[in-house]
Length: 251
Length: 265
Image 1 (cartoon, each protein chain N blue to C red):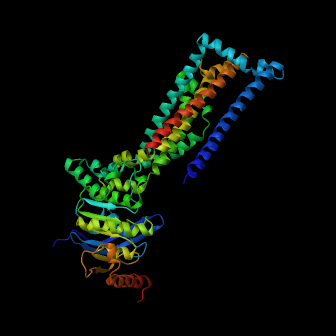
Image 2 (cartoon, each protein chain N blue to C red):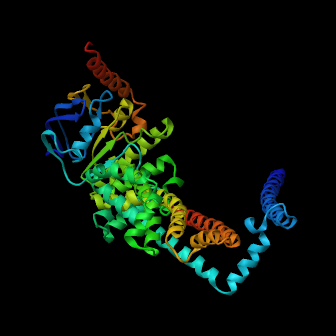
Image 3 (cartoon, rainbow over the protein chains, first blue to last red):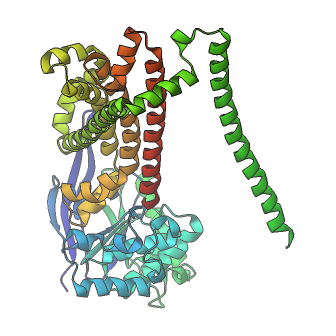
């Protein structure tokens, strides 16, 4: 099977007046079509830089990136525009790309229906709960039928309880739509509960130290159910140890 | 739960009473000041020739309404104020957008704008008279010069503070700088634009009056200067009162606009 996304020998250096900072160094990994990869690592390891490179927002990197087009991107905050209704927000991408075809619109309407946002179509973002806002942001992202979905700590702005619920929600939707996904997070539990593969980055400059395939005996569990499985704890400890060893330099 | 609406009713009544009280006191204060002014001049504590009085102002106003000169003066001042306000608003929005698009230009011009903004613009008025003549052009350019630089600086600062992540969103959705402006920067800056307009309408009026002091044959500013020179203080006081009313109405008009625009945000 061909890979959907591949990065080879990626290095990136930030330039500031104070000097330069190596953010990523010889970083390589690949993601298969339909696979959900979570990237974890200590803070400041260049996770967001990595996403920006994949998204094409940073150009001056070294190495080779192969990305399917178009991509979808979900932010830490939902970034719904407060002055547009939910419907106007979710069709923003279609409007910009001038793809307001009947087919696309009815697909968006179907998604709004499926994800319980239909009756809030004409409401404004501030009238919705945090979870619903994040779902609306997902519909906006999926409206352009992306081949690759990038999630940048998409639940970190939510409170702890909503967070588990929303990650369960969004995770299930992504599974159902068979999206190739790369999620950046610092929450190991979130990574294990949602991903098919966890990629562990080192501290700065970031490189891949381990890729851990995640598989549960019982296939097709929702993220919430995964958290209660016996394997969950083992994965958690394994990944935590990797990060810990890397940052202290000793086992 | 039968008590709940009653206690709320009580609260609302108290709130209404308070509102009435405040409005009532305002009117009492206004009318007692006018009353003191009137009786003061009648009783001879104040010199009516210098201080004028409410009754003299009303009499002057009535006669000026009859010969139509009042409407001409007010009309001219209003026209100049609206004209300069419109030009200030359009100019500053267009220039601020241009500076937002061209950050390099913004950096180069920054000290010039700061200098022009802090310069007391009334110092320019005499030069403007020499350059442009004793006419409406001079008056309106005086008004524009007073407000436009501060307005540009304000708007540009606000535009530059537009949400980075929202811009990133537009770019990821395939949008250009133009789309960033259309979908994020302008709609996100509506409250700022309106608050800047509120400042500008007041400054336009100030600028127009200063301009009329120096270069006019008509208008309220002219009436004030001319009245004080020929000791027709009734004209001066009448003009000032009308300016109070105009300033208040303009401010209220923009408040209404603000309410209407922010309802959508």
